[in-house]
Length: 244
Image (tube, rainbow, N blue to C red; front, side, top):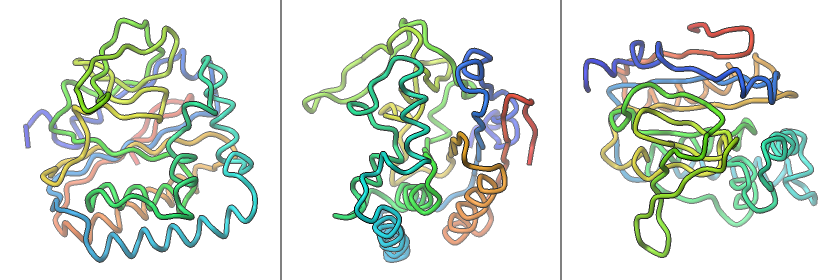
């Protein structure tokens, strides 16, 4: 791991722009940086956790569509606030909940774990390869000139966010578009990732206590595949940023 990317040093430079808080003053994010992970493909433990999440999602949804859940609806409102159409570009939580009844994706053990925690706690949650970052993570409203590398028709392409779009970025470009819609190819977790950044996004009605509980659950499951982890967490809100 690059010495500049120790969990504490990496999170020290993280920020959320005031323009994002002006859009949603209730926004809070927990950033969790983890080193010394043991990577690998999906396994029995991650599959069992995903099965639990699928079962919980089916009960939570009942006969209602995901967008009727308060924790999904609030993100639809946030997307509309910066001009996105949530029925076309769904936040990550809604996308997972829509897949849960027929089966959540099995990707690799790190991705499986954070997807399961996202569904179990009903909050958008992303995972990034920390060693692929160039500079600290920042949540901003895009100018439209930033680059975003993704796949289209099997080919790598460079796109650009819409002006005013809420995006996560680093010094090299956008790492996630539309707050928590689609991750860049460059920083995706893989079977070889040993250091990761996890981003837990919340809006009202989710409480800080619930955000901490989701973070603790994520740490607990990650610890089972890396008993000697280096962990740092940082909560950023309109009231300021603090280490937790």
